[in-house]
Amino acid sequence: MKRTGRCNECGGTDIRTTTVDAGGGYAPDLLPRTHSWWKTGKLEVYVCCTCGYFQFFVPVDALDEVAQSEKFETLNES
Image (tube, rainbow, N blue to C red; front, side):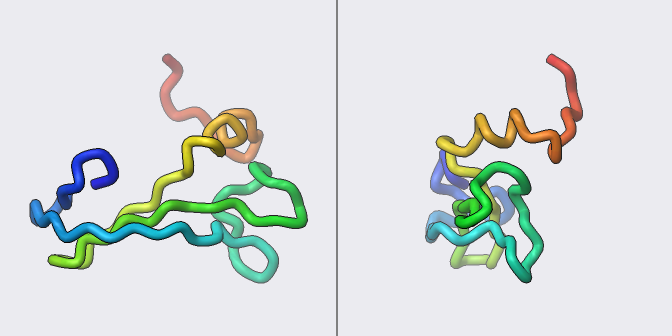
């Protein structure tokens, strides 16, 4: 959806996006140890307004922190 502007489920093209907090504090932290303790990480949300399917993406500028965080495990060694 993010790259194509088309829904992966229904093929719709009415895609909306926003940026939301990744949690922390009283909410689960979806990006642990990728941001300083006084501010939360961010997630990009893409929603298909045709079928309701949605996806979360980590912003490009936070990918290095995710890769270096010991809270995330590597699934496939390249």
